Amino acid sequence: MKLLLMYCTQFNYKPISKTLEDFPEVNEEGKFENILLAFIHAEENDEENTKSVETKLLKNLKWAAKKNETTKIVLHSFAHLAETKANPHTTKDIFDKVETRLTNADYEAFQTPFGYFLDIGIKAPGISQARIFKEF
Image (cartoon, rainbow, N blue to C red):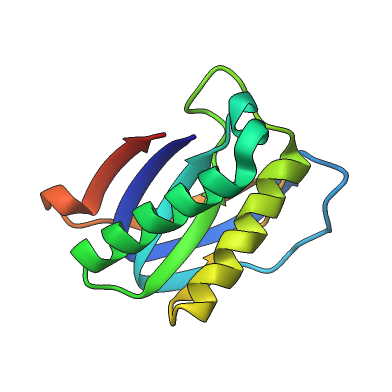
C-alpha cells in the first residue's frame, strides 16, 4: 500500500465522471475544514493479507491525524501511486472497515465517492507534517 497524507485547512470535491460501474451513483459534493486527506493506493499484493494492511493503514492515519491535531479524516482512493492495483472491491472493503474502526475510535471519518474522477480543491499549509508519504 502507498499512502500520501495531506493535512488540509480546506478540502472539497465534486464527482465528475464515474469510472467503475459496480459502485453506486453519487452526485453529492463534499466540503471539509481542518482534515487529514489520505490518498490511498491499495496494491495487488495487499490482497494477500487485508487485515494486516487495514491495521497498518489505521495506525498511520491516526498517527498523522494526531501530528496535525485533527480528528477528521477523509479516505480517497488514488490508484496512481504504484504500478499494480488491488481489486476495487477489496480496496473498498478495506476503506469501509477502516472508516468503521476510525469512527469507533472517536474520529470523524469520511470517504470520497469510490470509482469516480473528482474535481478537487485543496488548501494545505506549508508545514512539514502537512505532507507525509508512507509505504507498507
